[in-house]
Image (cartoon, rainbow over all chains, first blue to last red; front, top):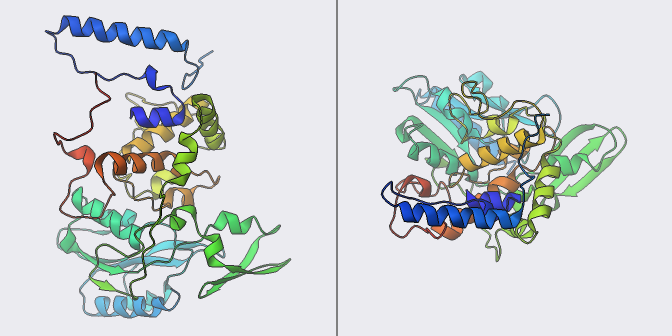
Amino acid sequence: MGNLLEHMGIERDRVHFSWISSAEATKFVDVVTEVSKTVRALGPNKKLVKDYN
Amino acid sequence: MDTCINKIREISLELLEKGEVDKVIGFANGTIPMATSPIAVTSKQDIEKLVFNSTCGLNLANYLKQSIKDQKSKIAVIAKGCDARNIVTHIVENQVQRDQLYIIGVPCNGMIDKAKIASLFDDDITSFSEDGDTLNITSSLKEEKLNKKDYLRENCQLCLHKNPVIYDTLAADLVEEQTLDNPFPDVEKIEAMDSDTKWQHFTDLTKNCIRCYACRNACPLCYCPTCFVDESGPQWVGKGQDETDVNTFHFLRAFHCAGRCTDCGACVEACPMDINVRDFTRKLNKDSFEMFGWEAGLDLSKRPPLDVYSPDDPNDFIK
């Protein structure tokens, strides 16, 4: 799915997949930090966004 | 290819006369030139309605499930290479039973790109006929003789399985399969673009989409009783022609076909706006091939890649 989104032009770094157990708090923190870091680097997403105004 | 229709009619007549099948699913001439539509022939008087030529671009696997009325009935179906692969997919996905089908295989030399031919004419085409590899097309203004090879649909040009993979009888001799150095030149062209160009490409591609869902209806893979776009609770995707809704529909429909699509081209054939919907599904076909060595509908004994787990599955994407 990540590949097809990337193919359509959604940057790969916006889409993250992970499997984290409820007991893996440190892994959760690491993944979320990584996700927010890479997404912030890309800036706001303008694709596949619906404007309701 | 035009000569095999006699054989198709002969086989169909015999099957119906012997009562081996309830009906024969095939193609009949459409209401305008250069068009064919699916037909279910149930009596021998209608056998002459069956046709087979280079305009039979729809996929007959799409009409099997609704044509089988109960568990005892058996139907015959005319199957090109891609139809046969979709029949395999239907059997693997438990939509039809193999013993309820009599498959009349037709080795295929490709179907023609009707939009490309229509673009040669300024007015409506009034007649179409073919003689071997030559297509004779006339309109009220002019007459064209075209070489079929130059006007094949893109998916037929790139087809690697012209011969049916499953059949009970053949209506013509098997044809030679082509080998391609690069089976996915179209996908690679898009892959080479940067993110914004890709997005622009797909936005331009779908900008004329009228959400008629002809692509979905023509697709043999789209057999869900209620499609996600028709659901109202929850409503997964908006129903209008908002660019995001249109792209969401095409993206999700394509993804539902991942590892199942045979690139039969029925979606493009059915599209009234001539949108090359295959740009979405082709990427998934390429991924399936590269990641799982998988081409859909070739083997009755194998489950599709997204249906099974293997320890060797690529999992680089997960953190």
